[in-house]
Length: 439
Image 1: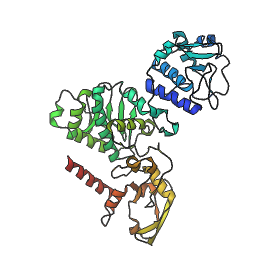
Image 2: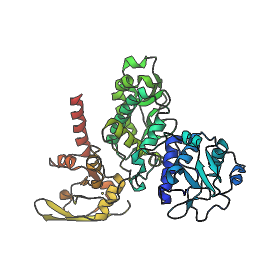
Image 3: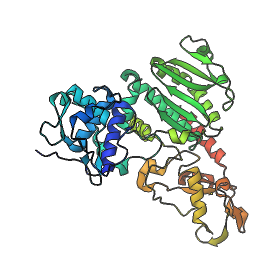
Image 4: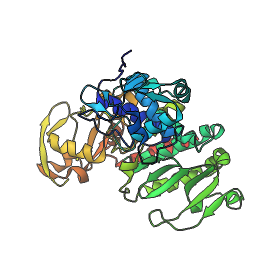
């Protein structure tokens, strides 16, 4: 019986290996990072695998199971010790993992004298039930390539290691609300990090919310904390002053109390997020952001949550509305042309600089049209001049980052519904007023 191969490209094979490792171990695969051009001439010999002097991982460790399960998914229950043939090159089985599997009797090698690893009943029992969701078997083109590249399934597995199921719903709900508030405060300043010990929401230079194994931590504005909570023994307030969030303190409590405590501290927490958003974005925020956790939350809560403005994991082809223009370059524009409305000469490069810097997300309400309507309209956004072009009159030098902001069509209409136009802050205040009326 010849081995059968289910995946033909190294890219797909590597993706499967990473997905299983992330799901079971929370980390990407540490080996098999590149396809090999030549077969391993010693791979058909069992002795070569067993003579490996480097310590082998336990055969039943999450990482070992992830590797074996990935190899089976790629090649079937039989695969060559010299390398699994792919479309271009070979995937060499990990020596440490396969040594552990041989010693434990999960696989055999050379029994059929062709240098082929075969899965034994014990090996089959070891990886029974280890499967990826169907979505993770899609092409790697559909996986967001940004920051923490964990799939929702892998993220779910990691989060459940330190958040119990009965508390998971409350943690997700409160975290989602903080994300929405952070995005409204400044779409380009926040990021969400997930690792094996905690979840952390960072806004500007400040950690505004964290959840870990049995604990919950959030930033609050000190003078808005209700008096009855200040003496609550369930809560621990740290009055250490924050340079990047003046007037704010932190509150720690058991995650079992997250629903009532979070709601009681909500005004103080929302105000603290607004203050934190005034600080500069931390240099690690974009690198550490986990877009897949946003996907996971959206799936669990059945609502579309925003990604940060800098997130660029969607299709590169952006559709632009020829509306208005915002680096270090300056662009000239002006020359009004009378039509149904005034149209101006616009430099596409200037417009693109504005959107690249600020992101295709409304700076007023935080709306991303792609989040609302789908990735095919990614980049669809108006670009608003902070100084109206009509008041400039003649050609003028414009700084795309300083003078222009992306706004959604609705907010743009509200801005220009009066003369002179409303400011962005004025329209934000209008939105906040409407929200208070609904509570």
